[in-house]
Image 1: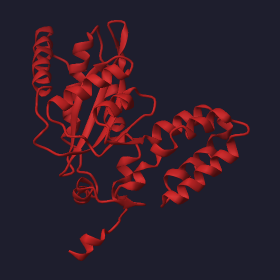
Image 2: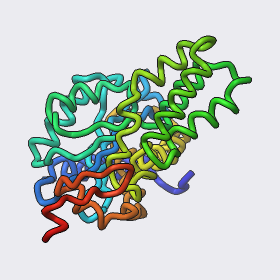
Image 3: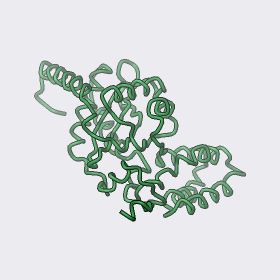
Image 4: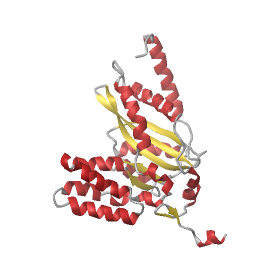
Length: 280
């Protein structure tokens, strides 16, 4: 829609984006302590070279609560090998094992994470999980099922979440076993957020930092006219991601990240005071 841009101007822009992207991919991560990661595979709204691009995206939060786009790579159907290559690169550039990673349960990411960052805990995205469960139910059952699922992840304690979880299984398992099996297979990793500060829960339960950013990017790339290569499409997504990053806010309750880094235990979002720390 930008009028007056000649073909030569567009070509220069694409060359600039490529150079900036390559420089960005070489930066170091060991000057920061990374606490949380959000990961997802984002399919562009545009076909490039007869195939939709799957961009593997990693957004991280450092000890100061700042969110940064850490990786944006061309992946292959979110395979374990593709994610392994992303994590190997982040590790080689100095990234520490994060405390928690949040993502969709269907990705090959988790196998790669267990291999390279085995101490990092896992949280499955409730946005993706609810969509998967509802897909296994008839539309007529969606309103009540949504309420039942919300009762799980919005419960104030893990105990109440477990009771709501069991109630969902009892209600839907006899008639819709595929839906309950989908929910049950990630039971533990759907509730990991209860072991972290309550002020962080809103950010830890879903991959919304990626979804909200790349929904706009997907729309922008879908409106792009003409034939593009996979590389040029990736570089375009990178530039749009950089623009979005400038408006990201700090993590709510970022002051509590210090306790997470120190390994302080949390129960139902509240820090458990250790006897030696109380005495001190």
